Length: 317
Image (cartoon, rainbow, N blue to C red; front, side):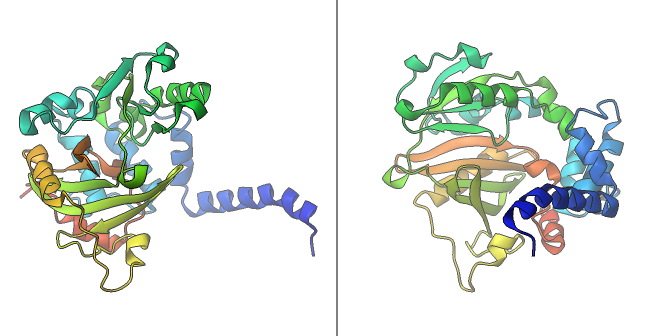
């Protein structure tokens, strides 16, 4: 049997062999890997998305007509060019739309906005705050205690996130028109000081169809549980499938209010995801997402992907 030292030396080789095997099984994975290096920027959008989809999802992208949820999100990228979309994708500019539809009571206070992370004056910020980029998806820096906060590490992360261009990587065209800045917001405490649960409402022209509960947030990880409007598990991803029979989502205190907010914010859009926080102080607006997982959510079962796709009416017939 190999000793521990031999096993450590062979681990990178085994990882390389697995990657080569994955590339041989699905050559489009090579395309996906090269997109991270900035290749193919000049390729036309439809061809690019077909190759990207095949590489990530492992199957052909059907666009005429699209059938699954992920396919319809790709279709929306290519054909739904509503001029208001860049404003929806800007975490600052979207507040004007939210204000018009539901008022200002649901905003988390903004503590500062900067073009460059080196401009951030951390001394002027409170002991608890949150940092993110105005165009970014998923990049959030939490500071629950400034005395233990690594300012330089935060600056480096923000600089890297500011380089992200979703108009190229995922061909999400509205991001081409969104200014990239750094935003500081107040820290939202949940129960017992923990982060509040994040409720993401999949909406279809003013109708809420699915609730995604993001809970048990840890560093770079969370549990993503899907539920229907009766709060029963919508079993299309592994973690939701694993929930016991009879499980029902615990009803958050402000659920009815959140559903009404999601309905009003999503009216007039074929599909958006409205993200809200249920805090001890009430509901707080998170963001509006146009292209959930960039239409590349390989966590969904194929049957679930098909079922969820029925909720998006592209009005093609």
